[in-house]
Amino acid sequence: MTTAPTAADRFGDIKAATLTHLEQHGCGCYPYADGSLLATLTAATRATTVVELGTALGYSAAWFAATGAHVHTIDRDPTHSRRAHEHLARHGLADHVSLHTGEGTDILPGVADQDADVAFFDGYPPTTAAVQALAATLRPGGLLIAGNMTLGGQAEQIRGRLASWQHTDLGETLLAVKPQ
Image (cartoon, rainbow, N blue to C red; front, side, top):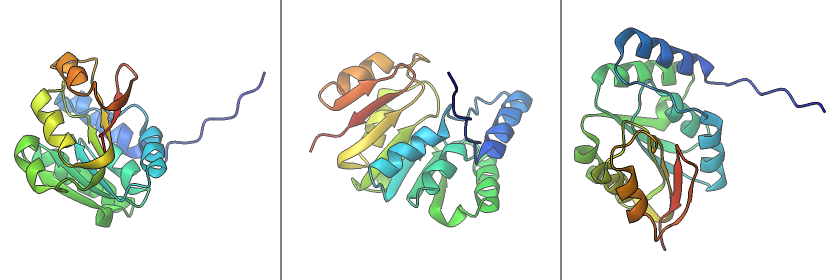
């Protein structure tokens, strides 16, 4: 049995830079495992607006922006925001991304007021407050992608709150569609 070769990660340089940054600084700056999955989900939903909580160095934002969607991405660390901007600019994607620096639950109410097509959480162990604030940015029928669900935090409470949404639990990642 033969298998097709794996396509190169077009933003592998950002992923590698993120892992190097993590190793050097130990700041919890992780790239999402499969950026192409994020782009596929974004393209499948025909998303024009994406909201992301947890920029790191811009790996997932690059994948979202590569679909043509406008991305609002939020990170607590100004160094991460600066480095993300550099990476996105080098890939010609800076015009598709609005970088916000600060606490996500403070910034989210002013971003994409119930108009986002996709909302993505990948910042730290999930909290109910962060995921609720992110979900509030979604339009009815919008897709919530919640990563880090195996890191503990309030993952079980989040799963309970999203039980009425159309959802699938992939372990590390929870996909849920906001009710109409």
